[in-house]
Image (cartoon, rainbow, N blue to C red; front, side, top):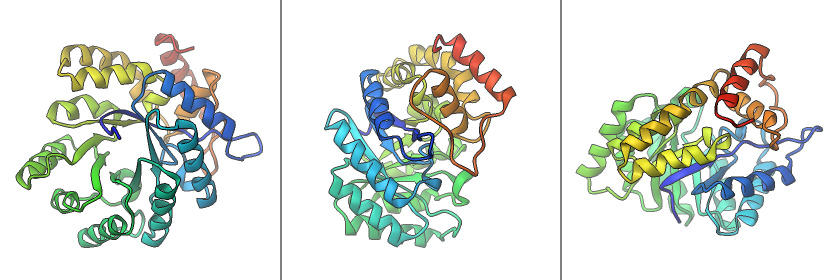
Length: 296
């Protein structure tokens, strides 16, 4: 299993009658693999995990594992703000044959640091699948602190953190903490496309990317160059992609990403309510960026 490099936080394509588009998922999987990505994540935040049912989520995990068939790393989105529900999803991911489970910090109920530790410890002890912690305070209302990350990193089976805090200094503190406690094998993965390059420079291991839905080839190139230590070449691609990195968040993710894929005639469909369709002025900005990158 390879967690380093570029993993795509896949959008979930929906049919016109609001069902999960299985054929579209399979088509997107093959397209992204052909473009050279290292891994695929299904049913994460970008996959609209907040508005897909657990039944749909389980079916999507099964589709991912089946279609990937060992060609790249298959990661299942398996988080919940209920530890019991998260365990059910993690166990399903394990039984389905996923390579790892991405588990978001529980949202809304804002567990204390020792509650977060207990959450991940219980999941890791109850399943054999590798677990990736996902910290995204802008979505959850909880920011897992460096001390707690260090404790969680010592739990067997917890192998990485997807860090999506905008605080780049925190990345230095995490990596320093991991070195101090002898957990250098614990991976630190970027959850922010625009911060991926500096994170790798600090010792990060790659990205779980929204941008790679739209431009997987360039994103993969940027990350691989950075991991090789060729930061001059990586920076060149970073700035080529910079406008795309920004415009894909001009409205709530994944609204712009799905609009971009629709413009590119890739399977995407609508976003589920309460998200709304992209606004006209945002669409104009998005189209211009896609045209400048020769993606249309």
